[in-house]
Length: 249
Image 1 (cartoon, rainbow, N blue to C red):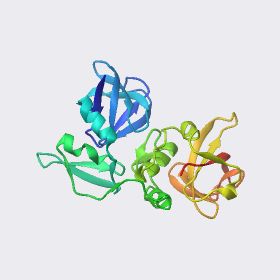
Image 2: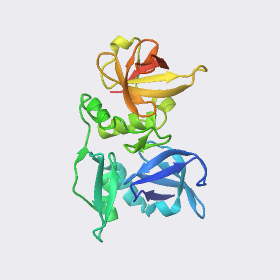
Image 3: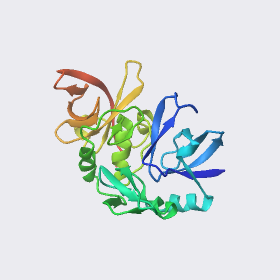
């Protein structure tokens, strides 16, 4: 087994080993992974944080020893807490890193970081505060940063910043936590899941107080939520059908 780490700001993860293949997620700076299959230009990897599997270009990753991988795996994650910050390499060159980048890798990449960071498990009350940092970030399928993010990438990164692990996709996240019977039982920071006409879960958002929800619909936005689902006040109609609310924390 071989191992690697992301030395760049944001690296696309693709469904197949091709630049023309769909981007299904992203690696952020400092995230580490196992290399499952290696080809001339591409590698299939499994990300340590959420066990997500995808293809990445070999030129955009850096291999590490197993002992480094295991060390990173046992450390409490230290994450960049500003929308955009910088790391400094040995040549004093700057590289931008997004919020949620993993700073534990600095020692192995010979980088320095002087910005704000967060570490450990935070109280549930911090969930909404973290979510609001992403407000108005544009929707990007497979995105996980304030420069472009999808619905499950948004919930995953907000929870990650507060010390909690979520799977990568909405349907996988819906398998975590405890289901609530009524919307009135929910509290700020719980997750709401939505499905399509075939019953497939295809959307997720974070519950706020007073029947509001923050989620990604073209951008990270705040809308009303009721027993039927998300009500967009601009469109004056429901846009997503509520399936279940889960208490993760």
